[in-house]
Image 1 (cartoon, helix red, strand yellow):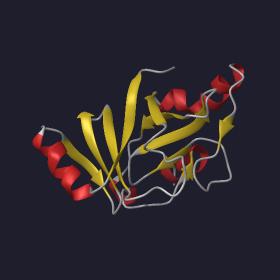
Image 2 (cartoon, helix red, strand yellow):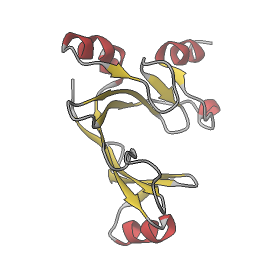
Image 3 (cartoon, one colour):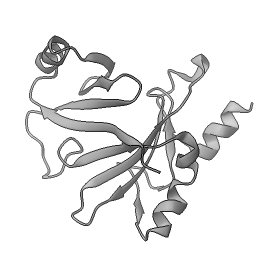
Length: 152
């Protein structure tokens, strides 16, 4: 099921300073918003996420205790069954109430979340081909919703 590293995360104090640093060491900027930036480690395979925060208000932040493993889109469709067969509980991401895998069209990926025995956030993540018409969508869609959208 797991093919490699999809992403790792680091906290940074000043996103602009960090962006300049990671560009200087030769990494290519993949994606950015106001508080985060992602740089390719291996283009279209793995990246590092930088999360800006002067002071985190809680002891947990995704950039401190999170890693994502790369899987194929086909395996993502079976990820919940695979995790359940291993007696691993799937958990919702952020403010989401549902636990099934979901697609982020704007980022071109899909995810499902779970935790290790110490409460570290783990994720299975895959790349998703996104038609140009949907690349600006910022909502998150279940795999089922995504596949219905593509068949319209």
